[in-house]
Image 1 (cartoon, rainbow, N blue to C red):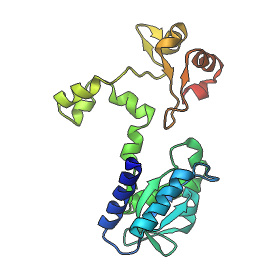
Image 2 (cartoon, rainbow, N blue to C red; image 1 turned 60 degrees about the vertical axis):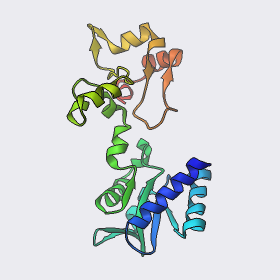
Image 3 (cartoon, helix red, strand yellow; image 1 turned 120 degrees about the horizontal axis):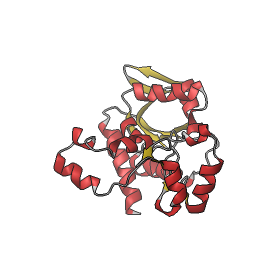
Length: 211
């Protein structure tokens, strides 16, 4: 309950700090969205407690109905202050040029993005794979801070790599309990473990393994 209230209050604060009257929350959602309940709860609380309305739209709808004016993002005649991504994480969210155009419109505007594109990319497995390499974190933070963070890291490999002259795939097949197969997807619900991972590694095409 407290976390929900904190999220809504943080959104309201950000929208008020945008500095324009009659601003809206833009909630980016998927086509045929099924994960509605907490989304609607945020929408209703923002309106009831803070008087801030929400516009729900897919990336395609944003491309069709959005426009830029003096750097600001408008959906129709409504000014957006905060873009809240509840879609835009899965590959199928970008299955057509219109979706990419919608994302470009958001990123090109002054609307506050949550998450920012940098934060979203940091959640991508390929970026994480780079971040665990020695010396990379130290480009952005101190050696002491990097050492603390690196204590929580595990090794990450691309499937085409080798370690000690053994392919990563062969290592995983030999000791499946030591590895997790993570596709390039947001969240933890798409991972493969143990025998299921072995089945995937043996049955996936070369193109699928790249992902």
